[in-house]
Amino acid sequence: MQIAANGGAPFVALSGTFEQDDKQALPITKRIYNYLKTFEQEYNDMKPMADVAIIYSQRTADYYGKDNPAERWQAHYRGMYEIMAESHIPFTVLHEGCLSIEKLQPYSCLILPNVAALSDEEASLLDRYVNSGGHIITTYETGLYESEGQRRSEQALKCVGREVGESVQNTYTYLAVRDQTLIEDYPDTSVMMFTGDFLETVEKKGHAKLVSEDLFGIPSVRNTTPEFAYWDEVSDSSGLMIHSYGKGKAAYLPWSPDKLYYLMGIHEYKSLIDGLVKRFCGSLTMKSNAPGGVECLLAKRKSGGYLIHLLNGVGTQGKPLTETVQIANIQLKIKGNFTSARSLTTGEDCFIKKEGEYSSVIVNSLGLFEAIVIE
Image 1 (cartoon, rainbow, N blue to C red):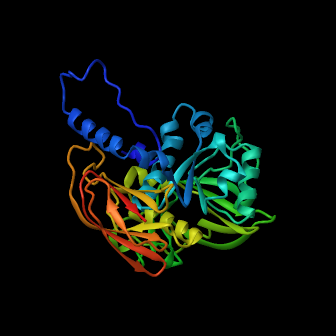
Image 2 (image 1 turned 90 degrees about the vertical axis):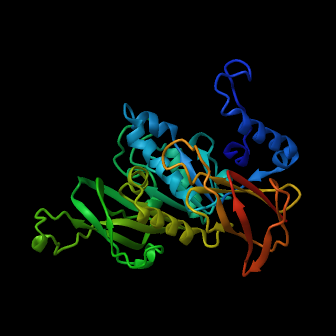
């Protein structure tokens, strides 16, 4: 259903016939394919849409990741994917091989999760995108390597506005949060847990202008005896810098919140990225109060309105999905004025009302998945 909801063509491959020794998967397979056959035209006509795009870089995995691509790059990508999905931000994935200014312009924000290996042409394209009013969020060593993995002498992206100096490891234990609106889910948070590599940066003279900086490194406390376990200084090295470049902005985090979220699930990292995206995008096309384990996917319908999928992975917890946790009263907010909403799985109408610039829809109950047509 995730494949279908993203506009793909799902299929099942069996070794042999349907007379399998283990028939556990056959009932749900039959249910899904009967459903897709019933609404075949709906799925043929829909067009997935998103406010945000994550750049997928196979080149970074190959040339930068080398013999350890899972840790050096894939963990960054997977962590950022999880953050977007769990935050219910309408997003998609763009492969580096098909980038063009025409393909980038529909998105309010691009995310580069440690896309270290960038060609000169790609860097120039991303600079043009920001200069024309787009926004990007980059992490760790994005843009610091050439397309075949050689270390660059300077940052490839002019819009980032920074030059990287020294890389320090496990020097900081926390990052001090100066602007507490930065992590809107946790307004009382003044420090953020930190571990791993941190790139010290300096301002690069050029066209990018520093707008704000935050998340300053707090040195590790070596003496953990309670009466001595405190710090009395904060570094001037920042973990978040936002630069304006032309009509757009670029946020640079010279560390790995994406990878650390994938490995440890620290919620402040998700709130940080979620807040930056919302700051750059303004009003998102869709919002939801669903639990993070429910993926919300948005598509335009050829005949008007939207087709919204809710995929319930709440019971996963890092292992195979073996049971479905029923969820009640999920609210969806869709930007625009809509008057009807109905479930494709049950045929029933959903309650809908206008709330400011959004139309609010209530999904009474969510099992394994739901598909809602909004017109």
